[in-house]
Length: 350
Ligand SMILES: Nc1ncnc2c1ncn2[C@@H]1O[C@H](COP(=O)(O)OP(=O)(O)OP(=O)(O)O)[C@@H](O)[C@H]1O
Ligand SMILES: [Mg+2]
Image (cartoon, rainbow, N blue to C red):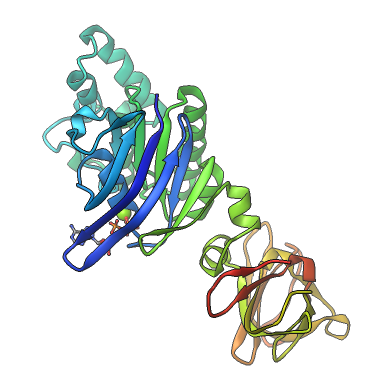
């Protein structure tokens, strides 16, 4: 077991810079999630830790040891690749068994280990197939099984659940969480799915264009975003963000005002989550708007209101019903609002 430390890591190819001077320490036994949109540098970061890509700058440590010059096979990391990386000529059984052979685990243990692992990811009936005879989700589970069949120093998982159907994904998520509790192996996990990040992580590093925008616990990332990027990225549906101005402690939008008690700022953005707004009678409300769309999600409803150029989405009760084009009122609670300086994108704090 070991910590992983990235020290001023950058990666460029010609004029493309995928990772810009990242420093990050993942504690021993920690489950760290790299979260961010497509192209922000997640896979590149993982590949550098695995030794499949050489950093243009900076140092990588696993435990006390600087591993920049170590071959991937000498780093004792198990990686689940975004594109599976299975051996096409080997059966599922042999694919899962492969790391045991490479690591010289006694042969007598192989069958039991492979079968137990296959069971964990629901593959026990497919052990004789070749990868090309499997669905995408099944291939992904083989890749996962191959990583967890032995206990490496570090797990690197790149979107390991992205090709699974919704139900299996939720099952596997719980399975991974349990596995982490059982194995206590330092894990770096890449996803662009914020629910996965929130549920699995001890800490989340939110990445944006090659930098770490915020590194915090899932709770802090959700409740205390440092900037507009993190605020807008975390939460589903996303946080409502509307532009206005801040004068004498009051945020002024063309349709409503909220007393937020913050210093002046000519161009400010107010953020408020759909679940923190309240639907009400238009006469009693802070603001009212025309219903643009109405969606039923099962456990709740989503009502999107249109104001001139802005929209606000409100999460309502699951019994709430409304028609498109009706006028609905919304209550906005100042203590639930986040204010950002539009120009710098940084959060303004009370
Ligand atoms: N070998 C390469 N040569 C040139 N540019 C590359 C190379 N590999 C990646 N990039 C670029 O680096 C950036 C980061 O890529 P990376 O694969 O790390 O993104 P990602 O965050 O994993 O995205 P996704 O969620 O789509 O997998 C992208 O702009 C990508 O086009
Ligand atoms: Mg990727």
